[in-house]
Image 1: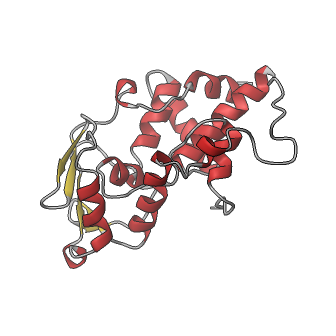
Image 2: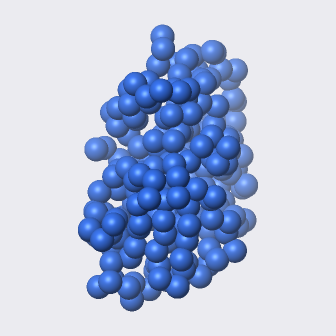
Length: 208
């Protein structure tokens, strides 16, 4: 899948808000949105009023950036959400939250979703005792996520766990910092997702 390889801070500036793509840096004065709160490019300071379609498109692009998902996979998730019972927009967010890289981030073992994705891809985690190195793996209720025993001494994960000890673990997850593990108590509901996403705009965009 194609990845955005330019400076990630440009994405936040393009959306006009912090997307917390670079972990702790986003909370410091080094954050680009804090220093230059306008879109990148020659005409970035001249924000044009968006059309209805433009507003819907920006919401989709912002959501893709949050979770680090490409267009093809995002559309696949939307189709999955459409085929499930319930509200399509909420189903979509639930699927995105169920990605293994997002769960690792939510548990505090990755400083950002991008770093969590890299850690998963490097084979540092296992689900229900089996190694999983696919960041897009969708967890289910009852799944147990652990740092593989051979990788327990991975300093970056321990450091992230210590630094994120004050971070509130979502109620749909249980975290055991001592064992560097976590459990999916249930799938995330809309109330559990703290991201400023208006999912109905994405549904409207794909419904055209």
